Image 1 (cartoon, rainbow, N blue to C red):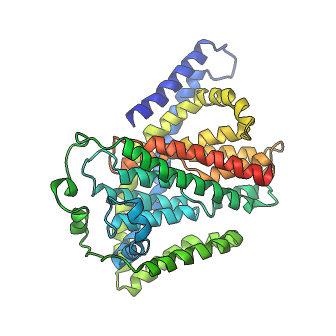
Image 2: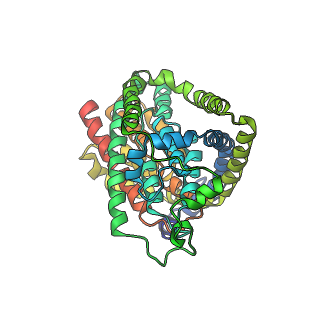
Image 3: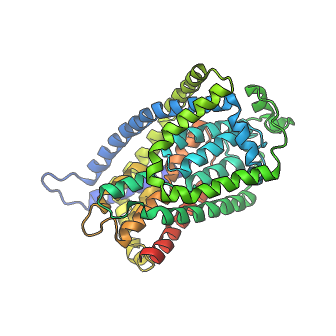
Length: 434
């Protein structure tokens, strides 16, 4: 992460310095270095505002998750998908709290609930860190979880659909099939490339500054279970039960695609009522437990502020220096030949760096009469926005929450998955709208 952060800053400074030296002063026009300076200040302030904005939603959803955990819901879900999860995450005990947290995070991403996914993802990282024999170094499970998270299958890109509707689209939900295709392809690739890189670049025994349960000879997850007081959840449900649950989820997918816009307003209220109702049925003191979880969410949100400040300042400098504009101009002509116009390239690059910045750029493109939401370019950039994630933001927040400094192949896996998501977006949009 040190190399990534310094590299972005250095490129931004070098670009701004060259532009400053060749700049011809004009009345009322900021110099390149002045723009970078302003971007640094604005980005630092935006990072704090973003973190404070997360306090409420993070406190709420971590509180709800605490209720679900106290009632045993996470263990039930983990046992249901045990056949899949034990193959994806062989280093994580199937009954560990990390399994349930990861499932809820991925489920929230599938439904397009980015704000709900973040607290679940941070909780999953915290639980995965209890199994980490090399503190400060990302484990294979952490890297795989992050890679899947950045390329998560997206069933309902609600934010993009709403933006398309506001831009006057005749078919705002027309990106549902393209987004589902692109994000599914990217997720499968993310799993493949992460597993491959994990075997090529294993953790060195010298990594980390200490040891935890597994490295001292304790069974994996022993410390976590001892700390949480959870009992062994057994070997999981019979295969036919897991198959029935998976089949039910698959059967619901066509329904959600057809009625996605009608369903989306019900999702978050439904989650709240569902978790609290489950806790009440299981005899959980839902108010007290939710408050305890919310307190933890508040502390986590404040703890990630320094990491957000660092990465958002670097990205702000990169954009303000003109480095992104140079990159787009240099590659835009070539990518247009394969169906990726300059607007799509701009969004593809920005999407990995800044979610809010990409959203703003998407809005400006969709409202541009020369592009519009229902053109090929409009469908393409909407699909790119809905099928990829802000990789650098996720790296900073998730790893920052557990003080991971050596991210290993996480960045490479995330960026490659982003590239595959863009390529898949081009392919499906050419087939359907080209």
